Length: 222
Image (cartoon, rainbow, N blue to C red):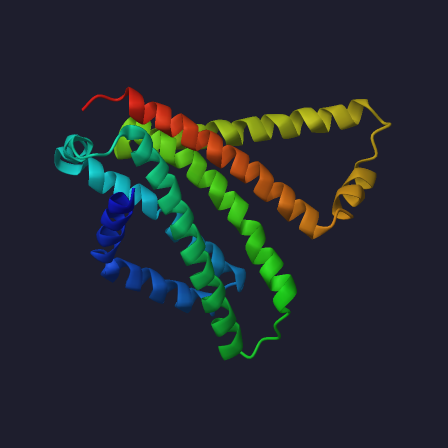
């Protein structure tokens, strides 16, 4: 696994010019947009780096060569998830640092605790995104994977709109439901509890996705 991690890091080093462009863009936009933007931008880029390495691995019939080395499909899948965690953590830290630097340069008041709690709340979201995208890319490849992801996003949005309509109709029919009461009840839950629950759900999905990805890679023949 160490060899696979080293390979992926070297792949990213070769794309350093692209990262410099991303960094410059994020810093410039941080002066024009909300301070949390730079954290979400950095974290999004970092969490999706793993997909770049999958594309490189499959390019020019590279997977058969990789699988000829002392590496099996299960190890390959686990390495991609470990690499995604490293990329997510490093990019998040870089984003938080850029955020504070940007706010200091703009002489904005900083409530460090509140700001960090908001920044941390984004991490489970990107963990779930990674968990969905890695198995899709391993199963269908980079090109087909994008199409499948678009279809899944469309289904999620469609189900969301349908669920909203059904819930609205339910509220019209059942007068006993006090929506404002339940909104206030949810808002009273401590932020820390919501964040911990979010991380719990995200890691469960993450490890399930890793098991699914290991199964996908084990079934493939090269």
